[in-house]
Picture 1 (cartoon, rainbow, N blue to C red):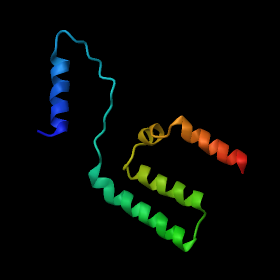
Picture 2: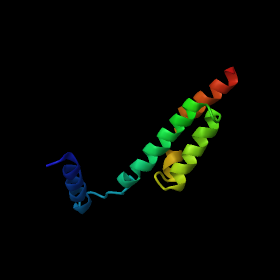
Picture 3: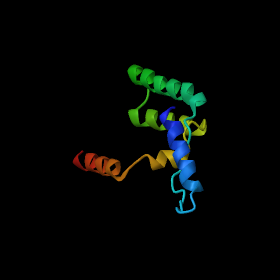
Length: 98
């Protein structure tokens, strides 16, 4: 039995228990496997344009992110949720040091 099935079975058993009050605080999203070719194409396109030196790096990254979000490969909420505070701190320190 795969681990995912075991976890789902245990989770269902815990929620059915009368002695345990379980509040569902997790929000798990399934992978969007049908959207994977779009993400791979965008990543490849950004790399090719980088190799040719056509656009500034920041602009390429922003365009790539917009394509991925608009094509609903990643939700905006999911994208913002994946950035933690230490990333903001690293960006701030990098900009401050020049």
